[in-house]
Picture 1 (cartoon, rainbow, N blue to C red):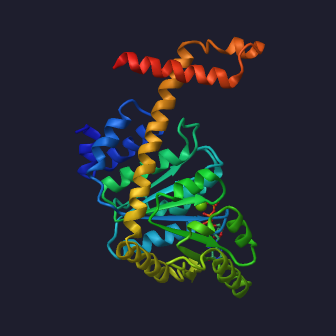
Picture 2: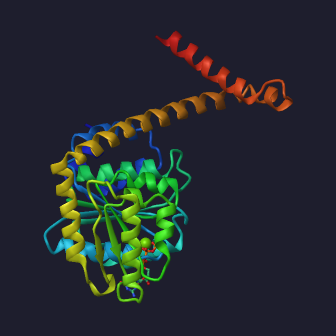
Picture 3: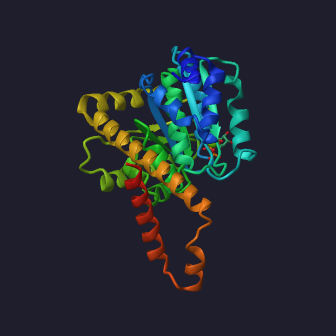
Length: 317
Ligand SMILES: Nc1nc2c(ncn2[C@@H]2O[C@H](COP(=O)(O)OP(=O)(O)OP(=O)(O)O)[C@@H](O)[C@H]2O)c(=O)[nH]1
Ligand SMILES: [Mg+2]
């Protein structure tokens, strides 16, 4: 077993932090490590929280941590920030907001920036979640800003996806357009102390009638005022109920298989691309001058690269 995997198994927090850096930096031993931690995963409850910037996701995560800790649960948090690099303000904000938990050994918080990682944010985030699971947290909270495809992708690793909305914000239309409505398992109307709650509730219901009218599970709507610790119990009750639904209906197993399949394809895709690109780079992109001069079209160039690749593989066998 990889020494870091061994240490993660023994709940060494520094090893977990190191392993996450391996994932982020594409360390040569990364695949070995991920192989070894797979059997350690105990299947924490993965909870995704998504919503517009400033909806109160971090505040909710922060309050949920306190709530869950008081019930004896251990928590891993991945805060994904697609826009700002690691020095950015939002992550700093999250750090400050969550700093009260920094000394608690049963809470582990990691912010992910894009950092130009080769395979993208979605892959490194998922791998980080896997590492946290192997470490043995009961609950893993994943916070993303619900904007792009990559964030939607990240959310798909979650067992339960909560969408955070605010009254008076016009969020519902955004959420609908971004395709988040389809994957939502729970709606959290946060900042319920602000005016416009009844209107927002009826907008969500109307959208649900449209999108989820024949779905076996209709996502419930919970109101929260995170800054006053209001609604946390209900959020947790609904998340637990959703997990129970996943178990009992068989949908949990379906999702698990789907996501394992996706994971395998993603690793193959990534490793293939990486080796292929490395080969082309070391060949000095020999086809490029011909493409530049118009003597070779891009499609034929691509075809030739793939053909060469196949030939190369045959020779190896
Ligand atoms: N009135 C009110 N304000 C809230 C509530 N929850 C959060 N806020 C405030 O909303 C602001 C944004 O909260 P965050 O938790 O940083 O929101 P976020 O969704 O994590 O934001 P990003 O990570 O930047 O997308 C902060 O100033 C919070 O104090 C609430 O229930 N009521
Ligand atoms: Mg935040």
